[in-house]
Length: 149
Image 1 (cartoon, rainbow, N blue to C red):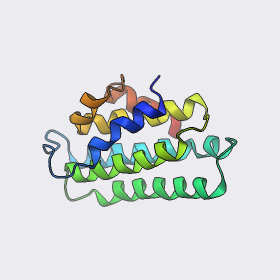
Image 2: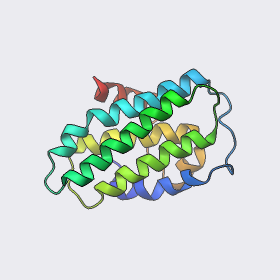
Image 3: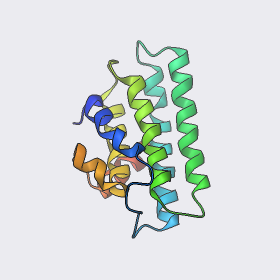
Image 4: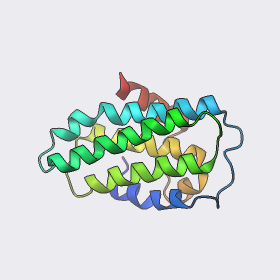
C-alpha cells in the first residue's frame, strides 16, 4: 500500500497549471463523474478520520471543507475538460494528505486516498511518473465506489 508520504510527494506535480498537456480523450461528463466519485469516496472516510486520536476539531473541519471544495469542482466542471481542474483536485488531495501526515489512520483511509490519487494520475500522467500509485483508473474507481456506498 502506498504511504501518505509517497502520496504527498507525488502530488506537487499537480500544482503545475498550464504546463501539462490537456486531458485529451476524457469527456466532460466522465471528468465530472470521476471528480464526484473522488469527493464521495473521501467524504465516506470522514467518520474514520474523525475517530482517529490526534485529529482535532480544527483539522477535521478543514478536511471537511476541502472535500466540499472537491465536490464543488465536480459541479463546476461542466464547460471544459483541462488540467487546471485536475490540478485543483490534486492540490485539494495534497492538503488532506498533508493534514494527516504523521497521524496513524486506518488502512481504509490510506486505500481511499491512494485510489483518489491514482484517478487523478490517470488525468495527469506526469504525477504517476513521479510516484506510481499501483492502481489502474478502473481499480481506483472501484475502490472509490465501494467507499462511497
